[in-house]
Image (cartoon, rainbow, N blue to C red; front, side):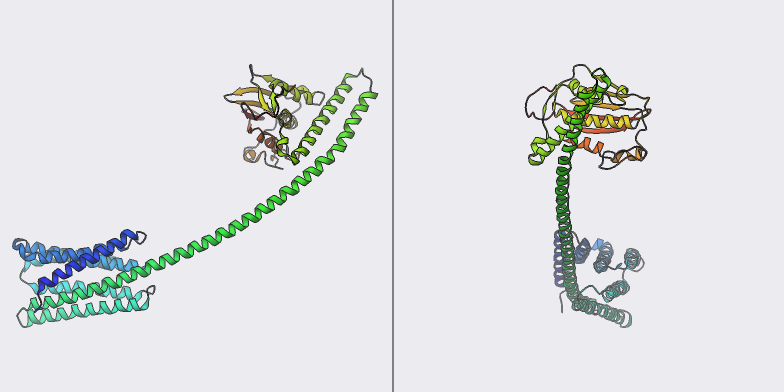
Length: 482
């Protein structure tokens, strides 16, 4: 004759240990959150067995113990079935499981209240719930195709044995209690607990095997995804390398073209300069307008020649591109004013200076060219009867060179693209231009860590502002430009 207490103690210890195993697996493998249902289910089974052990020690709480025991068993079964279904990517019959839990919460209090001595009715109800649970697990395993076939068939065999045991237990209970009128419940329960222990151990091993296979499959999937990502990154790296090589080749060709064009500029510039000198020689000195125009041509040619020579030298040594000096800002504006003197539109320019402007360290030729480009644009895109305001001021730690016109302005949608190479605003089609003026201006300002800001004026026209951070760039040689 089997000792029921010993069997229950053994089952309790095993179930609690199995719950702890799943708890450890869940803590270490948090990405598979479904494991928490197995940990909670086996822990509830262990708690239910503990309640069964202490049932005889508190006679006044036997009814409450029976209710808690059976409800906990039902909740534990529901957790394991639901977790099993979710592990195999199925619904897990949540409605059926909720119905079983609700039935257990209602049936046992009512049964104990109506007929507390009717043990057979309670056993049959417990078996009915167990049979439904077994059918649900069987269907879950039968529908699955993700797990190895051997593991699935072992699980189906264990659940089928559990189903048969519950059916046999129901038949024996009906025969012993209702047909023969006796009760060998102790012997029946003892053998059933031994079989229950065997079934739960098999279920634990099957679930643990399926969890391990699922974790292995997830790891394999992540490794494949990582491999694909690595391959994609390699392809992107190769594409980036090819693009970089193409960019280097394009820049090399661009530099070669720039050298060629810059070199070819020198001859026609020399011709223009000599022609201007000849005009000055043969022209009557009493004509100041002609003399002024000749000087303007000569100054412009000299400026282009110096720029050409500088960038040819910069192609050999990059640091020679910038010739930094201490600049008096009024002298810088004088350079710009001399460029426009004698040209059409010079009378439209209005210059103004703030008081006590500091000296700035930079390349006067580059800065003058940048400012001339902005003034050229202002003259080109504004009516002939409007003025162009050129102001110099200081804001905080920056020098601000401002060119303000009353012309056609900049369409709002074109503002982000203004200054890009070869880009021209949509309202400038009628005027000639290449779209390189502002681009070159930005490049010249980059040498000075400066920036160009273009914005529509409040009423009409455009405001172009150059911001140069003080004190400027390091000096090549300390000379005050004049």
